[in-house]
Picture 1: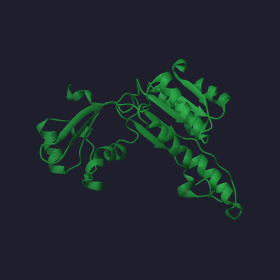
Picture 2 (picture 1 turned 30 degrees about the vertical axis):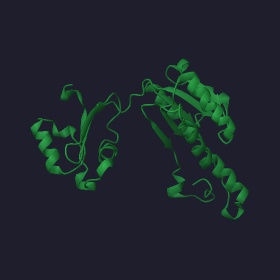
Picture 3 (picture 1 turned 90 degrees about the vertical axis):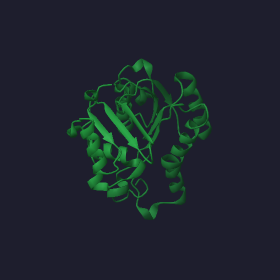
Picture 4 (picture 1 turned 180 degrees about the vertical axis):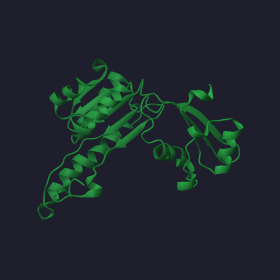
Length: 239
């Protein structure tokens, strides 16, 4: 592989001396080598993903190719290339895919080549999402209430039998209301935690069971609300 094929090269952020020496020795374009050492120092095993998030935010649109290189104690090292937005041959489950963030996640994953499993309660709106996705014939719609745990177990098995092992979950489903704190009851709390928290854990538990999750590994992503940071009157349950 030619080094010029890569748009960016992300090294483990051990120290400036090592990374500068690597760039000089290999005659690399230093404008392609982001660094977070000055900001965060050596953050150990998270230094590569942290550098991607911190320094390449907004720069990876389109078909970008990264070279990632990590090294550690003694002669331990690993280097590999990747396109961070290529989801070809991946099965991605998106909850809350009938609207909002879930709908956009489903559309975006379809554009990256994934086989997308769209999960939500409203079948009609799931079909509306499917209609704006790339290659709609390759994706799967499953109307489901994620708080019905026994049903979720069967749904996951059905997904694996239909399209193969699951590579990732984007959990966007959730419910909201506007309710003053003094009117929040234990029953209302239980309802919201079951829909917004417990259902996510249960789905993850089912997906990660033997035979359901991709042998190559994958990612489970929980989306949370900005209300948890900014707050708003009557939104304590949702935040």
